[in-house]
Image (tube, rainbow, N blue to C red; front, side):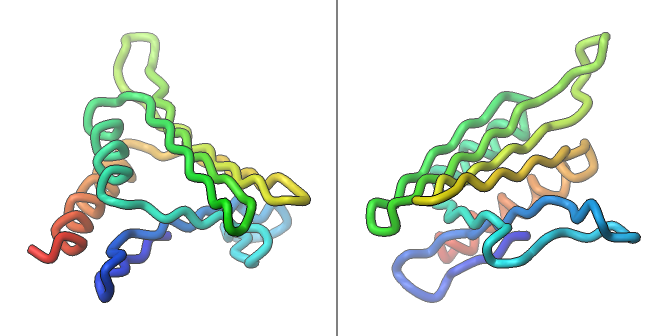
Length: 130
């Protein structure tokens, strides 16, 4: 899930990530507050992600919050088929809390990459107020 903050001086995008619920009959995610990871993305982070998605390159982001004593990492790693064609991105996120480590893993297919690219480009325009 993505959300935009365009109302104050700290304009940014928030990325919320959660694992699929393995016990659900239908596809659903575990959005409970203590099970999801939220990462604040600034313009530079969004640019790095766009670059990775556009050119099938690995992306690594690391954010540390001294106030809450937490750190969050986001890795996007492309996978290719036997002919060298892009197949899927694997998105892995981890949040180190003072007492535990949260991890989220999910594949991002070519169709989702196309939508994410449009979403992220639009986010830059909104964040900059253009």
